[in-house]
Length: 118
Image (cartoon, one colour):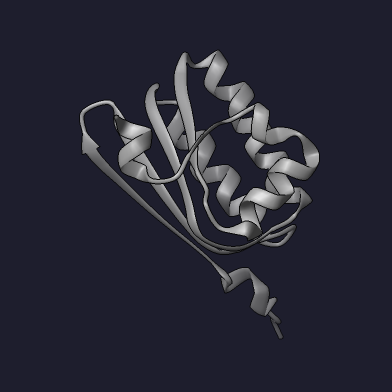
């Protein structure tokens, strides 16, 4: 018998490419130790293409330490791939952990996808 952790379904990832060389990954739900590997895979795969990569976290309701670690890894990977990583965050569930850890200074933070792409 297989038992699936119900929290694994609490994250939704949608990828779109609004322009050549631009990828937007919309993340919604809870980013915790169960769902962070799915986010990591999407980020690492997308950053391999280079260009501009926007992580739209406006739909995130919880951002735990595992999610923060994935974002830090993605920032390092973006530098290696010569990609531009931008994070869209306006909800307290995302901005508070970023501010509390000092990571708000590390990422290029934006209030909307449009402002990230401007």
